Length: 255
Image (cartoon, rainbow, N blue to C red; front, side, top):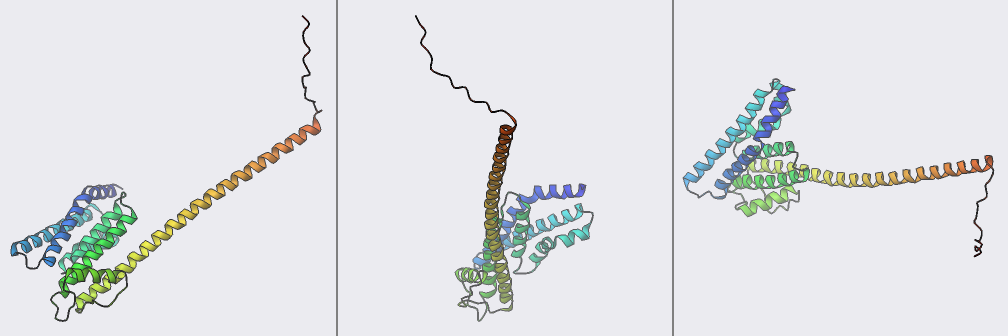
């Protein structure tokens, strides 16, 4: 359909620029969290970058929505894209929009394999969980996640569902982030497990197919040899046997 071609062309042209903007968004979000004592102009610049990138995300969504004649169907089919535009308004969940956009663009890019996508999702979730929980828990009265090292360790143990319990969020928003990180970690582990299982199954199927092909070739050769033997037997019964002519010794020619 013509509108589908237009949407595909738009996504093809904006894929790389939006990925770069998403990286800028993540950097602008990380700087104020990691350097809360930085000069005020740095925080102002980071907020400006965040809102500028959010505007680019919103413009991308609006453009694709306008290029599609069935707009309500487009909204229903792309809920994550809508969240990517809406979540930057919620602090500190704004970084989720970056991850959602990266996930959609990665799935649309044929040159990016599933392994790269999963690895990128793991790194992105680890970064998101660490920064978000540090921002929420650092100034909490009873909080025990005070440094980026504590935050990364907590995010890693939470994503892998190990949960040592040495570090834990104490605020309501921090616990909400923990629930999301746990569910995301379980989902990613499921994807990794399914990918490994699919690789083994495909390998076994290839080996089985090769074995079946060789067996079929042997059966075909066996049938062909049997047919040739049957033909030779029929010829031997219906035709007189012809003795082979063996040359005798050559007599010397007299001088």
